[in-house]
Every structure is written in C-alpha cells, then in structure tokens.
Image 1 (cartoon, rainbow, N blue to C red):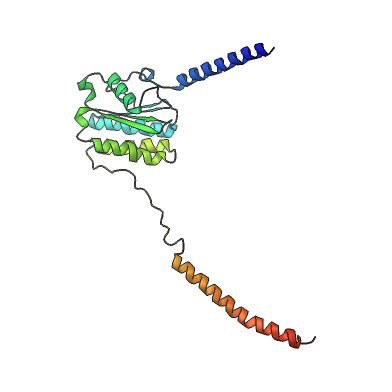
Image 2 (cartoon, rainbow, N blue to C red):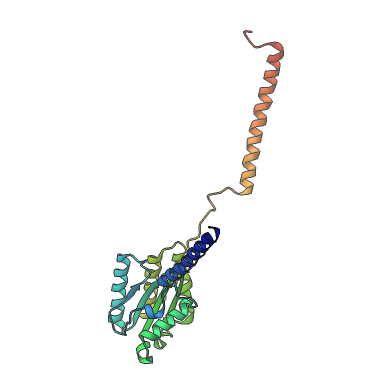
Length: 230
C-alpha cells in the first residue's frame, strides 16, 4: 500500500510540473506569436497582454493613424504578458521590428514600442532615418521615465498614452515635451519643526506649573483649616 501511494504521489507531482510548464509556455509570447504587420498597414496596437481599455486602444489608433497620414512616419505599440524564456524586451522588440520590416527601406520610417506587463519593462526600436529625432537619450527617457513613471502605480493605459503623445510630438517636428513632472510632496506646512515642538511643550509645562502652584497651596490650606461649610 505504501509503495502504491508513493507511485501515485510521484505521478501526480510529475503531471503537476509538466502542466505548470505547459501553461507557462502557453502564456509566454515570442516573435513568432506576433501577427505579420507590414509598413503602411493600418494596424497600430496589438494588445497581447489584454491590459489596455477599449477607450485607450481607440485613442492610440486615432493618434497613430493621424501621425502616419500627416508625416509618413509610423509608430506601433505591442503589449505582452511575458516573454519566452531567454528573451529580453529589447531582443523581442528588435526581432519583431526586423520581422515586420525586413529591409532598410521598410525600416527607415518605423518606430516600435513594446511593453512586458510581467516585468514592467519596455522597448523602443527606431528606424535609421528617425534616430536624429528619437536619439538614444530620448529613447532611454521614454522607456524609463515617461513609461516608468506611470507604471509605478500600474497605470498601463496612461503609460502608453503618455509615451505615444511624447513620441508623436517629436516625430511631428515639435519640441520634446519631456517626461511627466514628478510632483514632490510639500510637507513644510504640514508638520511642526523641532524648535516649534519644543516651544509648544515648554508652554504646556509652564501652564501646568502655574496651575499646580496655585491649586496645591489652596488644597493644602483647606486641608488643614477645613473646607468652608464643613
């Protein structure tokens, strides 16, 4: 009976591990899981992670379509839940970019923005003709500051819209609006300084001492003499 129990337990554990690995691989996304999109095609957002609201996806579609119509520059967005084992967000972004746009001519006016919601890391690949606009410094700022700031509170919709607004402004020839300003909490008027606290405590002690100095002699006097009417 003990031997049979061990065999059943071993089989159960093996099946559990295999099932877990299979499910993990099922949720992982690789370059070959992406639909084929060509330059000029009106596909702007692929929300593989299912993390964007319909309103956000529609807004991005409008923004990115307008960019393509007015400038011939194209920006596409991908979100995914997790990467294949061994892949990074940057290698995934490069692989998809080169799969979609295999020639230098197709790549030159293309930008691809990706987001892995498991690690909250993002990638940004820029075509050669646009790298004077989207410099390496701006690319780093977009992925770590513009997107990173919103993702501190898991605001995926806001992160993608903020990044889209900034990239579109730059590709449209406007001044780089930069990352969102971080609002610092002003606590100057909220908490008392150490000096103010000490002064307050000293005042309380003075008031208490004055009260005690008045009350104690009176109580002592009446204790010995007797309270009126007693």
